Length: 263
Image 1 (cartoon, helix red, strand yellow):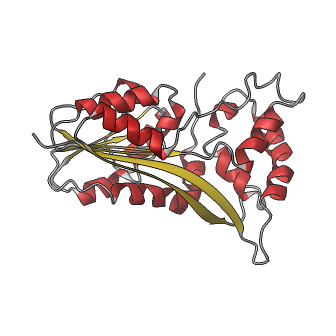
Image 2 (cartoon, one colour):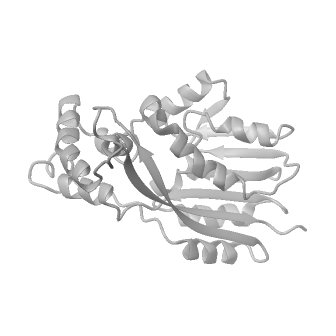
C-alpha cells in the first residue's frame, strides 16, 4: 500500500505540530556536531531549525514520502527519499532527530535500540512520537471504520501505532547504550483549533492530515469525502467548541532523548 501524504494539509496545523519538535530539540545539548540527521523531515520546514541551531554541521534530511520529499526540495532542503528502517548512524553522526515518524514503524523499538548502540561517543538521539491512540479522535475513527458501512472497504480498519510509555522507552534506551544519559517524558498539549477544511470540523481536518493517511490510500475520492462526512458529527460531539468558537484538542506525545557517553 502506498501511503499518500498531502504536504499542504499536513501544514495546515503547522504551529501546533512545530511546538513538540522545538520542545524535543531544546533538550539536545550538542555543541559542535559534525553531522545532524532529520529522519522523516516531512515538507522540510523544520529541517531549517536544525541548520540554524548548528550552522557548521552537515545537515541531512530524508523522508519515505515522495510528496513530502518534493515539498522539502521545493523549500530548498536537499532531502532524499529513504526508508527510516534503512538508516544507521555513521561515525560522524552526532545528532539524530526523528519527530512524529516512528509510530508508523511497528519495529521502531528495535530501530531505537540499534541507533542508540551505534551512535558515536558523545552523540545524541532525539525522538518524539504521538501517543494519542486512546483519545476520542482515534477511538471514533476506529469505531466508524469497523462498522458495516466501512469494514469491507477498509479491511483491518485503523492500524494501532503501538506507542509505549516514557518509562518503557527510557528502559529500552538505557539498556541499549549503557552509561548514556536518558531523558524521557510525556506531554499532553491542548491545541486550540478553529475552523477546518470543511469550516466546522477542525479535529477531522487534523487527523485527515496524519492518522487517516493509510485509510485515504485505499479509498476513492468519493469514499474519502463520505468517510469525512461520517466522522464529522461524531468528532464535533466529542470535541465541542467553547463559547468563543475554539475547539480544544488534547494530544499526548512521548519524547525520548539519549546522550551517548564520551569515550
